Amino acid sequence: MPDLLIRNIHPMGLDAQDILIRDGRIAAIGTGLAAEGAEVVDGKGAIAIPALVDAHTHLDKTTWGMPWYKGRKGGDLQALIDNERNERRAIGLDVHRQSMRHAIRLVENGTGHIRSHVDVDTDHKLTLLEGKLRTRAALKDAVDIQIVAFPQSGLMVRPGTYELLDEALAMGADVVGGLDPSSMDRDPKGSLDAIFRLAGKHGKPVDIHLHEYGELGSFTLEEIIARTEALGMQGRVGVSHCFCLGMPDPLRVGQLMERVARADIRIFTTGHPSAEVPSLQAMRAAGIKVGMGCDGIRDTWGPWGQPDMLHRARIVGMKNRMRRDDELELLLDVASRGGAEAMGLEAPGLAIGGPGDLTLVAGETLAHAVVEEAPRPLVVKRGRVVARDGVLALAGVTMP
Ligand SMILES: [Zn+2]
Image (tube, rainbow, N blue to C red; front, top):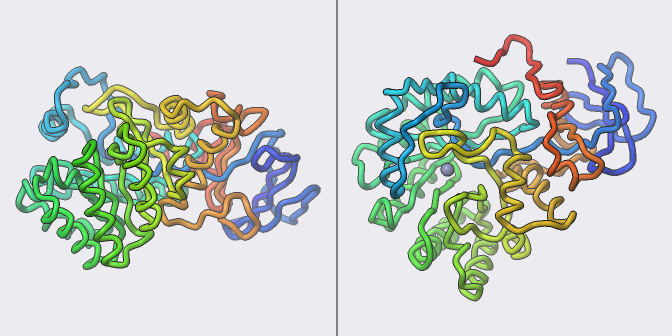
């Protein structure tokens, strides 16, 4: 592959520079760069940022591009879970096709890394994982996809799920998932011991959905912290949503955040529309590594969302009452470099020697780029142009 030289861009909104990417990594940043035989692209004065990172989504759930889904239900979490499990086949939700649509739109919008949970349950067994593994292989030159084997319908309450998760991890899932060990599984010790046992057996990290509120969620979180420390899993455990850190008890929340930071547990937040969420500013101030994700997009659960991390950053920003430019820059960092760091990836930002993954964004400043709803002019993965002006540009791959 030839070197890629992008001229006339503003790295992180600073003065105009060129960036040279060689062998997939940033080889030089400066003015008037030259490289014989390189593919040269005019950045036209756009801002360059590291690739956007969707650190929490569900590529196996979206109805994007399908007929409008009319069967959404209200009700509690269990009702939403059951509705989805029962409706998947009835509405013809083909996971490979749908995850391609979802992931390609994320790439077109500048995303270079995705962490996607995939439902593993005793009805669908490993078929959803298989569809997503095909998508990961098809898009390997455009985006890195981490797959979390996720017991969406429960682990302890559905015998046979543990064995399926074990098989999913052997088949190529990268992370062990979990779901509300106390409120859904009704057995926090059994559920967490099983999750951490699988992590130990396969040498893989953990990412647990924790919707549990208040003191119940805090109790479960303390159990997660205890296992993380006892097993030496610091830096390899994530908690998604973690709504209990959004409860209106600053003293208790402050103490919990300190303990989460000490155990180096990563928090993945989505600006969830139906819950109080932990404060992004408070988590970062406590030293917690935080990632951000689109979560489910237009699925059987809800009609909301777009496969675009800047759209999600705006939702998270509004949810966290952000207004100032420095707050918008924090949002952008969590949606890109910070999310990669939280996922355990190399994340130096735009730096010489760092990964050649970047996207150009429209706007006068970084803060302006967060709120500006405009197509990304250029998306680059490992030094290869993968999308231009919001459209995939990858040989042999088309939107299904
Ligand atoms: Zn989720």
